[in-house]
Length: 389
Image 1 (cartoon, rainbow, N blue to C red):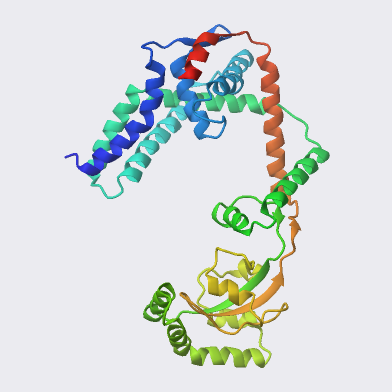
Image 2 (cartoon, rainbow, N blue to C red; image 1 turned 90 degrees about the vertical axis):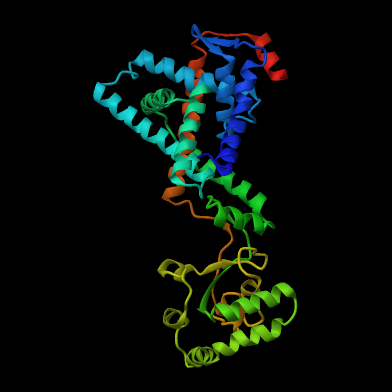
């Protein structure tokens, strides 16, 4: 039985694809937009590929059909033609069977991802019905298991071709790319700590410049129980009774807090006490070496933690804060180190990343050079009409 959840999910998928299907048929036909090496390429193909390229960030937008055509020529049609010339499109039956199996597994996984993602609370029967209807709809718009197999085969063939395209990369080129990216990161993230933390923490992006003002901070976290921490959080949200709620959290851990400070005063090591007392689930051996990276303008930590990390007692490396209360409990903070600002060290991982980038750039240039060897005829009138639509 198809319920309202199924109907909403199916409507969403249909809506996402109707535009691409409609553009190709607005005038009731499917004109040839260009001919590459004697091969006609139709408007419906360009529209579909433009959408895919735009979603992958390869062109500026789904309606940038001129960009899509040039991208298709260089990155699909030229590799196909060149691979055929070199015999790289020939496979044994065993290889073809393996490629087709991988394509089928990927195709099925995509159907499952849509069904499970759009219908997370639906019954198994509803998800299976949606999956069947989605597959039927995809078939109507040209996305079938067979096209998936064709695309997978093309990817294998193109990879074979790329492996034959040897390029030379110098240390000077690697260093230039590194310095250019460092400067871009410096310009963007200096004075923009929120963006820096967003990209490094939430997006896990490579950022090759560290802004000034970060310090490494360790903590002993003492959890005060759900009732007390929730009462404190509610008081903060309401803007009243905060001090009373804060004191209640502190009182619940007063004996342990006093033990910790007494042992610190006696000269015991903070890290040793941290391993003994702290209930911080995120702390591990690696993090204990670096500390949490905290800046006065940080937005990824609770406000009390950030303020405590830069409190009056935290003036120099080795300093320990007074007890800090947040919705997580009681924090005792330790000023572990100053994090040096400036370019990160170009380690092997970064160097390999730059090498991959330069290799791709030079291979694209080779493909663009090869494109000049093949005849291309454009139906400019049809292209202009599509652009106007």
